[in-house]
Length: 93
Image (cartoon, rainbow, N blue to C red; front, side, top):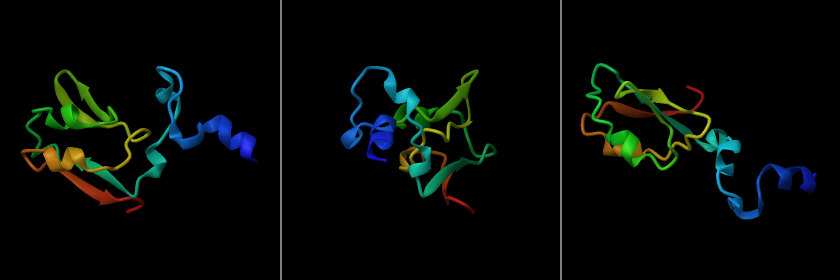
């Protein structure tokens, strides 16, 4: 079992080779997820700038949602949103 787990994620969660973080789906770690109210969103992309996990999706210079497979639910996007368009919702609700 330990060998299986070690092949999934290195000890200490260290990224030991460049570009490998794309392989690790870390979204299931979170207890809350961000949700955007598109009616309030001004597409300033402040959330995209501050997201430490590159989980904010942008298309044609507009925020279109989140890449939940990597979002850890830290809430930085919601805290930095000047329009208060992002709410943190309990996972599973």
